Image (cartoon, rainbow, N blue to C red; front, side):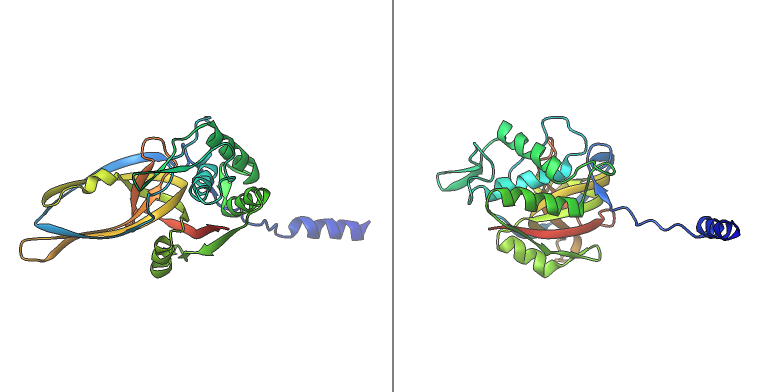
Length: 269
């Protein structure tokens, strides 16, 4: 009896260790919550752009079923829509691209795409633990889905210690391989904010909170100069498919607000 008491006492006195929960990525309140917009006005004489993008960009898919926290399944469907131009069975009853006068265009979203989003929602284990999808859930879900189609998918690290690996990242874009990014708050900028050639540029930095999943298809550095040829401002940008209906393609700024947690080149073969 005394021994049992001692053992129970030791058990309850011992510290309890729990494995840390994996970070989850969502949207709505968790990932696409607008917080504020900051306007930057730049007066300049000329600017230079160094842009590398995947030809034709990416599909503009978003969730149409009002499911909870679907950003990772939507991001996965965007990747599948991109590779569907090479492997037409990745999205059943759907052809993702067409070529008109030599220009590649993505087909508008249909119910076939939402069916894929719903399937990935299950395959990725979205909302199985906390709201959203873990990074491992995203990768395992994509592997499961692509495997059913008789294909394989690989993930190559493009973010290390929450910093983009610039040479490898740009190489992925040059090789026309999309990159999935997992972010925890980010600065979103409309593509149309950078249309001025000279004079004045008004750029609206839209700050979003929470954790989100994006698919990158380009990189761009924009430098502004005054009349004396001095650099007066610079934007370091990543072109992304957002998975949002109102800004399907946009830039995220690599500024002090944007926090990139992880990222991988995705290749389907």
